[in-house]
Structures are given as structure tokens and as C-alpha cells.
Length: 235
Length: 229
Image (tube, rainbow over all chains, first blue to last red; front, side, top):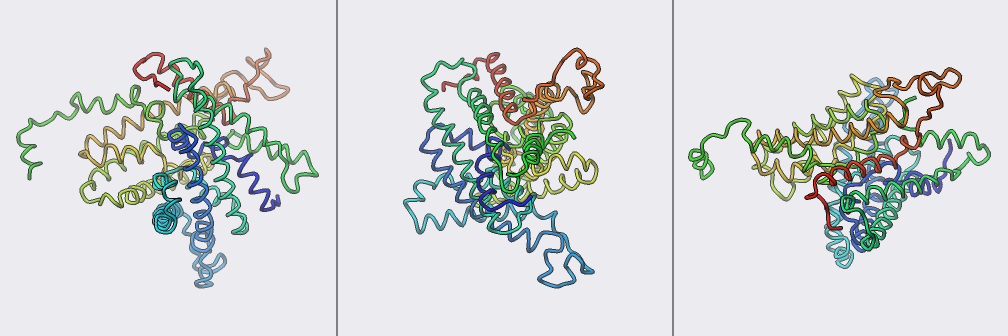
């Protein structure tokens, strides 16, 4: 299936939203969504870091880690060479190292050159190294094998924006829910889970959006959406 | 020096003292990592469509946590506090690579279904949380017990959610049809009488709602856990 960069971008924001479709980054999503202000700060930091780490990990994946990706060093290491090298098993450790060091680097750069932004993002940046959505983004990028670095970046920024929308929305709802009469045992965490579930159902309606070449073939579209829905179902 | 003196003064703690037992039993209910500490939800929800996946995920987490906590606890005096997050991440990542290769070798079909979520054990907040909160400041043996307790606390929630979702969502447990066959044209058992699977259960949002209900039940029984807002 051919997808344009815009398709990938919109898909990452809505129908494959990090939180509502894959539950990535739930820990910080639940912990930092008590007020809208902090939610905006964390959301912005996530967009920022996803937008930086995914292109870097894309380059790593395609020029170092994949089977035969080291062809540029020596043709013998290529896919058809006599000494094919597959460093795929190292991808977890490489990705997490890139993420942790990028987060540290970004933190230092922001602190030095944009103190105002640092004031807004400051405390959230270190938290992000262990945010599942960042590593998840890189792993999905690896899984889906985007064809160009532009697509990978679009996917990264799109996922970040999707995450941002989700956390700001739940923070706004949590601010208002303070005035409602929630059953005591559900207060706090319980009701947040259930609201997130309901929001997820609402977001599932975006699965009907048609992308790219599927437009002229609605049957294909149905198969595609049911594959997304049942991707974890037993065949 | 002072540590060894203290050790001499204190009578030696029995292997499974009350305190140590508490380390295992606490995380199972009153201090459950998922429902009370709110950690490790990321990977917990996505793989609870089937009991089998949840089971293998739990085994992987138990393995990574026990060895990770042990290693971090052994190294706790050597890790400089400024770079501790990166050191911890490298330890977890290496353990997860081992788990991933093992799953690929012995249960390839499960490994395929878990896809990226095995890798996401690295950023599973329970593991980092326990490293920070416990292993960095405790001796190896209590750290192992703490790891077992928390990993089991995680595992039982995972299995409970997976059980509910698989039974009502696809009418199966561990892939075995318990309500009879629902193939079109050759229905048997409950399906013959008109029973339908609740397809909503298979969709992502229901995982959240099922966990929400578990939290509700847990907090109704133990009023101390109720939050203000």
C-alpha cells in the first residue's frame, strides 16, 4: 500500500494515536495530567523529542543495524555479500542509548540557549527518557520500515502531536471532573482510566478515514481497518 | 566501616522474616504496581487480548525484573547518581534483548504477536520505578523479593484483564473454545443458542475500562486507598 507523507502524518495523529490505539506513554499520561498547564509542557516536550529521535534512529536502523545495512563500509557486508552482517538484535540497546543521550543533550542545549523554554519544559525533559511512547515510536518505525527519512520524521512528529492532544484533553477533563460527584472508590485513577477508554472509543471513529490509494477501493479499506483493530487478535 | 559494625550489633535477620514476606505480599494487593502505584500500564494494556500473550509477557517481566533488581542492587554503590538512569536503562535493555531472543527461539508465534511490546519492557515504568525506589538503596536479597512481589502484582492484573477480554471477546481461554464453535454454518454449544461474542472487548479501549473496574472493586474493599480527587 502506497502512503504519502501526509497520510502517515495524519494517521499517526488520529487513527493510530499513541495513547488511544497503543497505550504508549500511559504512565506519564496518568501522572502528569492533573492540570492543563503541566500537560501542555510535557506534551510539547514529547513532540520535540519524538521529532528528533525518530529520524536519528531511522538513520541508525538503515545504515547500521539492518541486515546488510553496513554495505557502505564494504560490499562484502551487504545483503548479497559473503559476510552479511545483521546487527538487528542490538536495536533495543542502540535506540534507548540514542534516546537517553538525546534527551540529555536537548536538555543542556535548551538550558543554554532558550532559558524561557527550559523554564517551561525543564522538569519534564528527564522524565521523557523513560516515556514508553518515545521508544515505542522508534520500534514502530523499525517495524513499519518507512521508505524515506521524511516519512519517518512525519510519523514521529505526528505521533507526538497525537500524544499532545490526548494528554491535554484528559487534563482538561480531569480539571472539570473535580466538580462532579464521582463514586469515592473511582475517584482519581479509576475514573481517569474509564474516561480514557471512552475517549479511545471516540478516537476509533477516525479509523474510518481513508488514506492514499485506498480511496477507490472501499473493500480494501475495510480489510485494512479491521486489521488495525484486530492486529492483536488470533488469526 | 559503620555498616559492618551495624551488622555485628544486629541479630541476623531470618531469610523470610515478616519484613521480607511483606515485600512479596504488599505489591499483590495494597501496593499493586498497576492499580495503586500506576506504573507499567503502557505495556500492560496492549497485550491483554489473549491469556497466552499476557502469560508470556508476565514471564518476561518477572525475568527482567528479578535479574535487573539483583544487578542494580549489586552495583548500587558503584553507579554515580548523575548517570544512573542511563546505567539502569542499559542493564534493562541487555536483559530485554536476552528475553527477546529467547522468545523468538522458543515461542516464535507469540513473539510475533507481542511485536514491539517486548522491547517496551525497557521503558516499563515498574522496572525503572523499582530500581530507583528499592534496588538502589537495598541489599540484593530483599531486592529480589521486592522484584518478585512487584512482578507478580503486575502479572496477576495482566492475566485477570486478559482472561476477561479473551472469554468475552473471543469466547476462548488460551485459544481453546469454551462456549463451543462459532464458525458460520457449524455453530455449536452456546453459539447455537444465539450467544454472540462481544467484539468491543477485543478493541483497545475496553482494556482501560476493565482495569478501571478492577481499581473500582479494589478500592471499594479497601477504603484507605480512596483518593481525594
